[in-house]
Length: 222
Image (cartoon, rainbow, N blue to C red; front, side):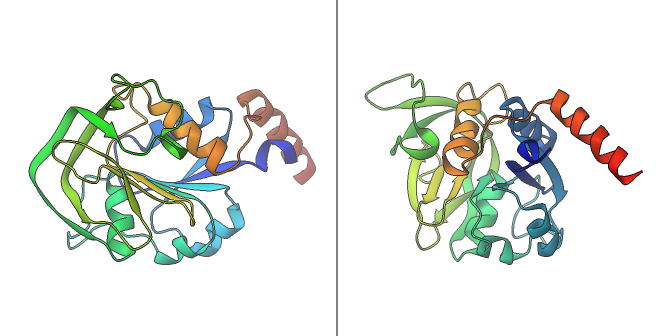
């Protein structure tokens, strides 16, 4: 049981239609994951003890009156974070960067040009080795105008000068596209680069082991 639960990923849900799919992709990589609401108390996150946190997308804008906002203390836990779409904009908003309405909404297929092919973009199958481009799936109306202090851009598109960014020292990463959908062919590899290399998770979890450990746990409680 200890072996199966030591390496786990927490996904904070901000209302995206793809949140369950993120959890599925992580588990397909044989790493246990759970979804918590965006407003979960930080103490519960500490108790869960994840090796990494993924911030989901959302139909909202960070500037909406009732925008879903997590506790900024999440970024002080010393845990690697990956922000996806809205999650990227939220990281920017909470850590001192600037988010603005994009002049052109990006929705659907887009060409992502990778400027830094290390870390989460390591060992991807690019379409053009010279430009290092991959196909991704976009769905956003806001874009990053200024990244927070400590972050550097690592990819761009024709409409988004900062389509991905990182703060390597704090292990914070963010992408404007959706790596969890099949329309981003290299998305699974990107997620695995995060959960394996950056978070240090090992691919040891399976549904069978989860059932076995759950049965043992229930027996112990009974």
